[in-house]
Length: 326
Image 1 (cartoon, rainbow, N blue to C red):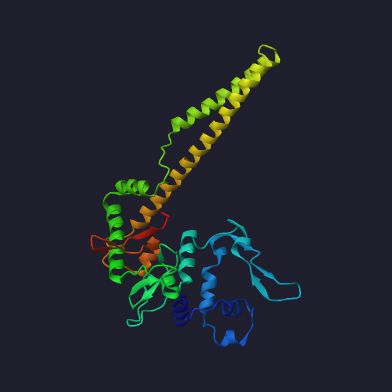
Image 2 (cartoon, rainbow, N blue to C red):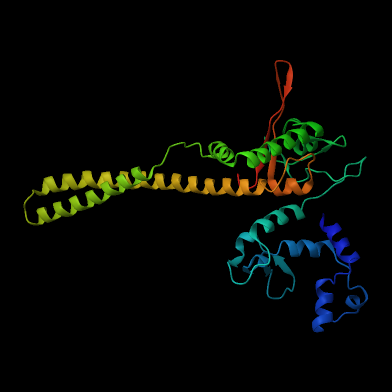
């Protein structure tokens, strides 16, 4: 539902809007309008509530500023400049739902011209080349918004038919649903190898332990050499040359260890993401139709490539970015 339709739903069900509630319960914000129209929700109020990060259990401050001390007008600061302190109070919504709702609430849900139905893929479709949204074209089909507004010098059309897109996405979602139902382990392996980093180097605990052991060995050798040098058991030239070699080896070991731990951590993060996606997709049985709820729940973005002619056939690739697998 759009923010407008949520506002209408609350009004029809006689849910008090925030200030009318405060007015009735605590006698605050006394105003004739709140007494006369206590259920007149506005869509911007819905958006502010949905986008309020404090409901996730965090304190958010320094959100607004003023042009000067003489001005009363508040200016919204960039989110990167906010001060956020995590986990200061009990959350009433989880981060995952908050992120999905925040993304969906600001999408313009423009109806199709003839059917008056909402665009099922609104806010999800992206041009693979320019990154801009694909807009509705000829009632149901889609076309790159940059191409439509600026022409072919800026981007190609990326035109795709609604039915082709719909069927491709439905088939791909059902593929993952069916795999999750019948063979979760096989699906987990498949997703892991598909989304793992381009650096396919394997990281073993034995290798890390071996390198860590060598690092400790070198430190002990360097300590022993310093003692021998102090006792004049080795010459200064021999000591300096040896220390330099060991010091260079230590630097190489540190670089190697750092890269191995990065790969190991990325692998662990990917394993967690794959598990979360499989848990998410396991909620569903084989789908007959796509709904907006399913798309919002499972998909982050859909990238559409420009079509190609291969053996006189029109071939077009789409790339589905699922939640947790980005």
